[in-house]
Amino acid sequence: MKSCLLCGVGGQGTVLASRILASAAMEQGWFARTAETIGMAQRGGSVVSHVRFGERVASALIPEGKADVLIAFEPGEGVRNLKYLKRGGTVIVADKAIPPVTASLGKSEYRGGEMVEYLKKHAAKCVIVNPEEAEAVCGTEKALNVALVGAAVSKGGLGLSAEAVERVLTRRIKPAYLEMNQKALRFGMQAEEVNNEDDR
Picture 1 (cartoon, rainbow, N blue to C red):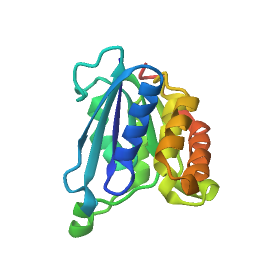
Picture 2 (cartoon, helix red, strand yellow):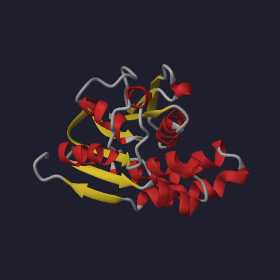
Picture 3 (cartoon, rainbow, N blue to C red):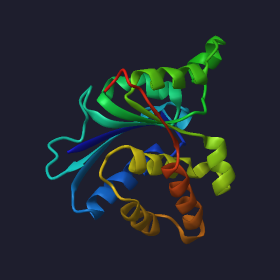
Picture 4 (tube, rainbow, N blue to C red):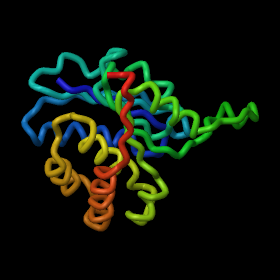
């Protein structure tokens, strides 16, 4: 069984990405379960999605320390949810910070770069996806979620194929946006990978 935790803030497409991963797993003949914790997502709050798939899946919720892959749409959310990643697991992170509402209200400083460095240090493998580069390739920032899925498929060891994901995209995405998302998938599959020799 494989477990993937996705985390971000409202409006980033976290839930859609989790559904794409689960659907791709089912395309390959596996059983899949998903669960979301959305909370104040529409106001920029945290969103967490659990995806588990395999021959048998007893529960959709991933226990702490059991996620094979952590997909962080926002670096601070990645740090907050790092407890779910198993030792030897992979972090996929978008390296553009979105300051939380609490930081804005308290006028405290929030450094996304420090969060990314923390993730690099505390994960066996960290794959960086640059949202601005993704936007330049795809023509929109809205395809970031598919770029992160592409990185997870390519570098996360989930056993999912790009072909299965493309079939899901063809079914789920409107024709006018399909090519853009296909580009995002391929972009994510080529994302930079950083290995941490101390955490294997």
